[in-house]
Amino acid sequence: MIYNRAVQTRSLYIHWPFCAYKCHFCPFVALASHEPFMDQYNNALDKEIEQFASLGANNAEIETIFIGGGTPSSWPDKLLLDTSGKMRSVYCVNDSAEITIEVNPGTVRQEQLKMWTDIGINRLSIGIQSLNDSVLKKLNRLHTAKDVRTVLEQAKKNFENISIDLILGLPDISEDEWKKTLREVIYWPIKHISIYFLTVHENTKLYFHVESQKVVLPADDSLVDLYSWSVDFLNKHGFVQYEISNFARSGYRCKHNQVYWNRKPYKGFGLGACSFDGTSRFQNSKNLMDYIQAIESGGNSADFVETLSVKQVILEKLMLGLRRPKGMRSVEFFEDLSETQVRRIEKNISFLKDKKFIKEINGMLCLNPNYIMLENEIVINILDGVV
Image (cartoon, rainbow, N blue to C red; front, side, top):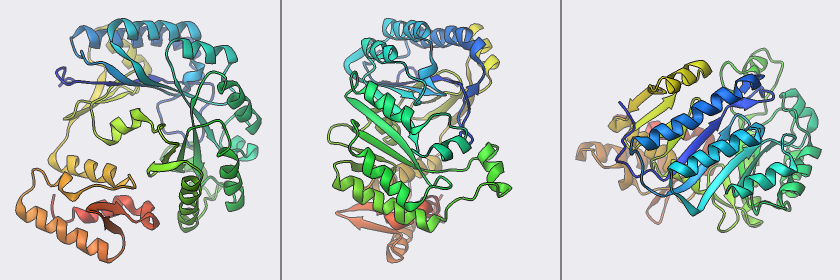
């Protein structure tokens, strides 16, 4: 099975997997100490981009491009210029397209920032995570608070649209320290803030440190209260919440992420990159040499393909819909269900509303913020006995 070439795809994702180091909490396709493979990988990446276009796979104007990783700020200038040139030679990129690049503090040069804007990159996403140098070091995050302030000072000369990532629930970060961080960042030259709960993924170093009790994580209850405070605080200071983890000043919501949340098609290029054509999901090989060899031989780089079932579609609609403060209308996921199934869902929803897990405002079904960490269980309960 291949990506449906008839689909109007207006969003692209490009993966640069290389990192100078790998953070202890990182579950992503990221390769540390693999610099000798950069040229070979870049050639394969450019070829994959060209191959997809040569199949007549997309004639829509591109509206969003997201360059993620890994650490895209480690992408050598010459290689990034090659890929940017290839992208624009085979796709029609809208003049007002949102083009984002992820960067880590301490890995950015001033001349890079100018070069990025010259090739059309207009949104910078900075992975800050914390301003506590000791905590960052324990997580093998090799930047400092000074590096953060340096890159912001440099970036504001070239970028108006800057986003930062922070992690809530890191070990050894007190409630007061978290609040102090937010009280500082609201005055930075940024337009967008993403706050993610720390997730301990299996087989990461953090996972083994938690299992061995070398690292102790804060209690979930305290995090929910702190998250609630953060939402109120940011909303009051002009960073309005539009998704569970995302806050933006007016006019600066991330367009690319909304493609994911609205289940619109997107095509991913590179190692481990994911794609969605509206019906099926695809993921490229996560093995570097397998990916390169598949592309060089003209084969299919995807090693995982899945056509979504009715149950999976409903689950996705619910999960994504409830992640947004405005919520969703229940009829949005009633399609393809029988009357009996609809009545069962309505009964489940009524039960969860009585228990205050969810609420309905102006016909929109919303998650109670106090139960944000139970979203998965709430969704399963909504669909209990249905699919």
